[in-house]
Image (cartoon, rainbow, N blue to C red; front, side, top):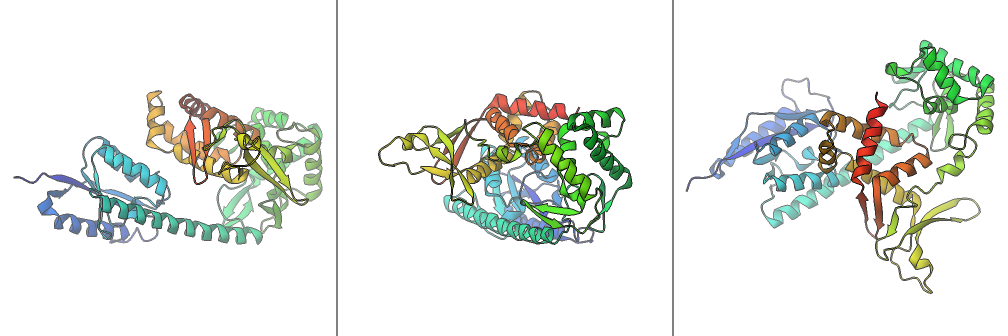
Length: 426
């Protein structure tokens, strides 16, 4: 009986671009090992396809990689039978992402093989080994992430700028913030104007009328202006987790003017961005969607106070009316639960299922990818009441169990959020 030919695709990845300019780099080494492995399986019908799927300078923490997406497209189009990698973590370091990829492979009848870890997804023991290896890969990634966060925290406490979005009014020079003269003039104008008129909206309107545009030619909005007027960066300071540290950079605004503006912002701005901002930060964004997975009832926000600090929780309503507590969930930390749900949302926006839903609405793949990225960048800058609106728009419910959380998405909400993000680019 003739052996069936199995078309093999090699996928390679390296997290940084360092060394990729060399004649023989890490991607070449991974591919060479995989080619040798495929050749050793010739009697099994394995044949290498010529297409290269190489991602240099891309993290394994998500699936937003051009070569990986091309590979997935070719799988959908029936061009690949086996995916071969040097190590499992080259494909993904995220357990969630790997589970999604595994489902897709199964759906299209594609096998997966690792050169160095002897994984064969056609057997139950092979699948168990695969899950264990992916768990270790995710653990390694999380440990690395913790080290990076600790290093960034130490740098911020020393007043260093650690990268990321460059504050308007500055430019990066040798990893330090230096005044951008053109933008700094606009920042100073904004502070002086606010002392005269006490209106963030009017300043945003005047900036646009005067053609003093934001970066990339974008118009200003209220949130842009408000963030600049509230930012300690402009008086030469760095803020980290509510603490203020002296910065290495030079101030653009003198402290007297900055403090005067803060006083007026607290007094005159509306509740969303003014005097009630501390209260809004404790808004329970899952109030209408959180449910106890064991009792089936709603969970309500509450808090406990030890005289020094307030602790926020979601409690099982049904359990509260019982003479004796029998609910295994009972209550959960509000910040912890909200972080879990938001992280799930970030990932869902990147999944094939979400992209398929949006594609059915006539939204192009480029726009879907952009909207997912915009959602990720947007969330951290939203006020709590706006976060609550988006949660209620996107989620049907959040079922809370002792060891996991299940969330149910509203398809029409997903379409609406994408529409809002799309309109924001116009």
